[in-house]
Length: 532
Image 1: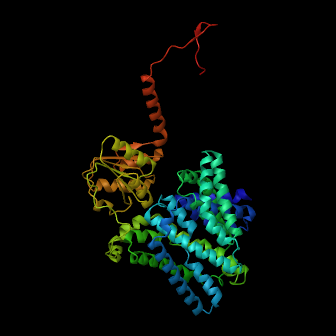
Image 2: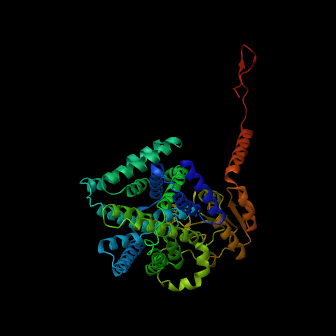
Image 3: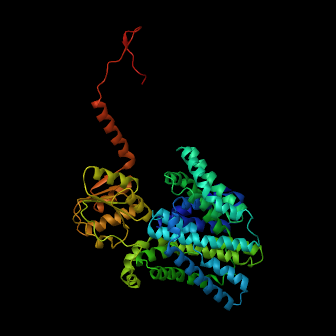
């Protein structure tokens, strides 16, 4: 049975990719196809789904900085949006003669945005660490905390007596967990360690009445500032991606509602853009630039999987009629299908609507303000990850004036602490090159991994008259032609050229070594040479 839903997911995911949509849209449709054929996922797909969601949230936790969660923008936008939509939906349902308890329960659920969807899309675009990515994830975590409270209330259960004690002691786990991560090496033990911590955190929080999702997230956050957290995230990446297919399939397997039960579908779909509009205006109200507010609102442009989880718990406990479940499953699916292409094209859409959107910006200092010039720098390195940092250090060692640019404020702060000249800036911001003059630069090195970002920035640089050296990484041969067409002068293939560089250095070192004569074997009267 498993081979059937894997095959359907692959074929429809491939079809979605062919039309420029994320594969997850194909997985969602595949779930409805399987449900129409009468095929159920069974316990296998349920287990895979649970593991996928937990690994995703654990991965988010690995990338989170606690300071970013306590930002005024996160708390202000997240709480205001949740309250405003909760009140609005509640009044709508009460007007439609729905009882108070189910109306309130549904309203809070509909106010949530999808953590799984937003994290997946942001990760695919390499924007989890960007300012708007961290803002979106911070708002989603705030919503997840409210969702956990809803689930506890729906179950009519109380938190364990040990819960407050454990929460107070949670920071004490950081040191032993970090030490164990250091001991785990770089092979299969690292993978097992990640699974152990993610599932251990999930089940511990479940036992305390706090929910598995929150437990996996907190477990990741405890390791977020470890030097090998990124390596752990990459090790778990493939496993998480495969398991998340089950999550999207299972939404569709909930089945289609009948005509009578689907009467709320159209009104709730119409209200979906209002969620994004409210996010945008709240963002500008709290001092964000229009671009950041717009990108954040599109990342949160969906209904949440927590709506389905909460609805199932509510139906089980008599708070909500069970007839709502298929309608809500279809609603969440439709919201994903609408949000996927919008999120994928978010930068292009902002460029198109920019002249109207910037009118809503407040004339205040923006926390996401970008640089106005490059100073006396001769080289600009865009993307200060490992590659960008290595390029920056080599240039400065050779007495070249370099400036780093990164869209992750946490990374910017880390580099500033290490005395590097690095400023905040988003390479996909169409206004970036209008704010800074690049004509004084000798060259620009594009160190970010995302192909679309490299193509867009290189094209913009050439259109703005930049004539200097433009270098970038290429991970796949099929990317080379696109990069050259957009003005790249030099392409570096990290996987191939790392070996070539190693061989060059080995030859250089070998030529500089004076070889000593080997001792003779007294029996054979010939040099004793090491085995090949």
